[in-house]
Length: 362
Image (cartoon, rainbow, N blue to C red; front, top):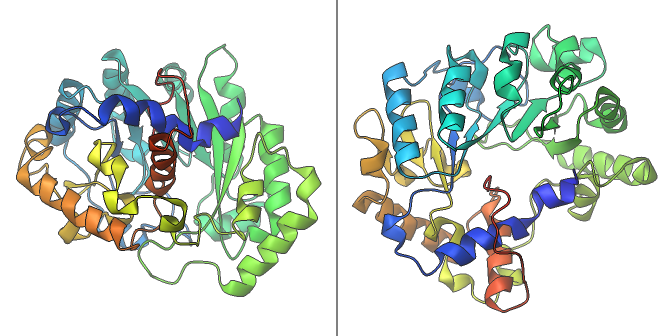
């Protein structure tokens, strides 16, 4: 497993090329992130969803079952069980995951791993990706970051999962905050020792604007540390080299339009129905940074079926709104920016890639 392939924006091209000339109003989303609960068993100091978690909401079992049925009907290729809260705190999460898998939907899980048990291994081994949050190799530091007691659990899953052969990729994700960023090398080494296939470092992203991001002096110090230990990292297993190139920012800080010949075309990832994000309050969104902002909500699954919301007039109106943001250079903190860069190169005949879709998790 090479992390560069996993993160490559080229994986968008087979999807883009196969969908760009189709009737978009008949296409379901390629990948959906289910943020089905705001409840979490941790209280991390760097949580990008800190305010939302205080709401302690979750989708009802009836609504979840309805959504899964619609996603299967719309031929969605992949589903992330992901954030807002901790997805494995939802009773029956593993059965929901298995229903998707049994209907040929690929499933990925983003988790802190605390609630995972041996009885879940059979389902976990059928998933494409599992990303476990790791925080520190120091127990006191771990508890200071998370207010939790699962220090040992953060490194246990790779060994358990690999007791039997399977193709599941198991990675680690470490949000770098004001407490742990100075120990980035030791965290990397701990993840490699535990048997993770890779570890991604994410300087904290402050989606809610609540002051949790690293300050300029922290970013500068982190950048110096990464350069100092440059030769100690295997870049097929971590994104440290990418962070260095971006001056230790997770997302590019330059205007993305500089790298495109035709940014006026708008966001191609949205236009080809790349992603949907379903929030624990029922809201459906097209971009992660806008989750919870009513202006960008295309509907609510507590009021309408997902199948009715998708490709509705409201959906089309929000696409237009987001295209205007994209053209104006207002988009930020979104992985779709890199997918747009790849699509731009493809349209200029500068990228040739296999037509086979190998990774549906865009």
